[in-house]
Length: 131
Image (cartoon, rainbow, N blue to C red):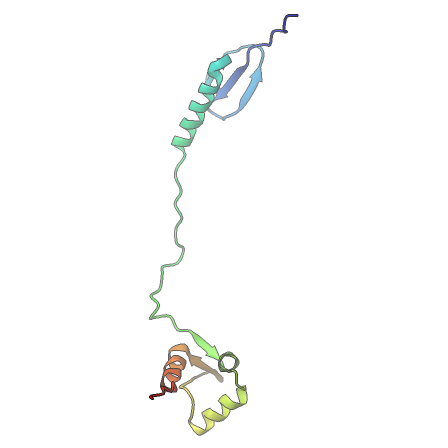
C-alpha cells in the first residue's frame, strides 16, 4: 500500500507585521517571503535572527544613585534598643534622666538613638578579662 502524499508546507513570513501562516497554495505579497518544504525552517530561523538583531537591547538602570554608607543614618527607637539589649523601655528612660546610657536624639518629642552611638557605647562597656 502506498502512503498518501502530503501537501507541501508553505510558510509566509510578513516583514511588516511578523505573522506566520500555513497554506497549501502559494501566493505573492509585497512585503512577504514564501518558502516551502525543507527550506521553511531556514527561512523561519533567519527571520527570527533578523528580528532579534534589530530589537534594542535593554540594560537595567538604577533609579536612585547609591549613597555611601557613611552618610546614611540608622536610627533606633526606644523600643528597638530595648529589644536589642533585652531590657525595659523604662530602664532606658531612667538612664536618660540620670545621665547614663548612650547619647540620644530628641526630635519632635521622640527619642531616637543613632546606631553608631549604640555601637560605641557597647564597645565602651565591653569587659575584657585579663588573667
